[in-house]
Length: 336
Image (cartoon, rainbow, N blue to C red):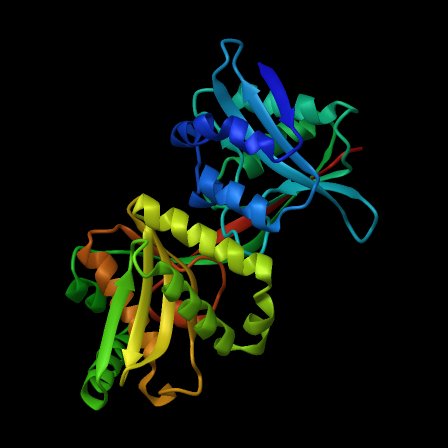
């Protein structure tokens, strides 16, 4: 195995033609590890301390990729963590060719053991429930004599979607089934209601501006979230999604006024609910956010998708819609 470490942003460009090809062969490959997302995050939100660790076979094929960057913790430790970690990326992982898992893990640990790579702690955040990293890479690190800590970071509530809307409704709690139907009828009866989806570059700039405005209105915390780099990141990712055919940006209008929005990724036969927003001062009695959730669930079912992933967070409403929690893990490896 051959290892190359890229330490500036040009490494993304160098790896561009190989990155997603490896992702298609990887043992676990969350959307957030795609080249477009990772490079956009680094361009908009990264710092100057990049470590893209690329592992190739002796014949030159890329079989492993660890997109990392360095930072200093409040305790003064030198820490390496995933590009994208942690606030806006719900799932992250190493990209490891399924046919070369043991060799890639061994090569990565050997590379990190080299004194030329400066770190005290390796923090691999937001590992999905089906990731092999908290088990197999962790065991390789233990054999190196390093301290390993695996802990649950959060959960992602997920719905396995049936073939049709009525079957979905039959599968949720009776009270929730009544509430879904009641709220949909109420808003349609008491107001002029329109819901729609933006899924291409057409009108996307205005749609993203509207999305951000509604997100800001949701809570004070969300308003503070929107720095200029964060705005640029979201708009960049939305364009990448639209160009690839993976964007589903939903809105609901009530009496001609935008009341709620949901930014979803329609990717790999799944709906990922990435973020949402609503105006709490408009039409609260009509529950436009809950209604829009129902519309997006029904749309996902109509499109034949297999899963609806609410992504990280244990908000109660997700479970009322019938979601089941899947754990998300953090792996910390400390050099001894």
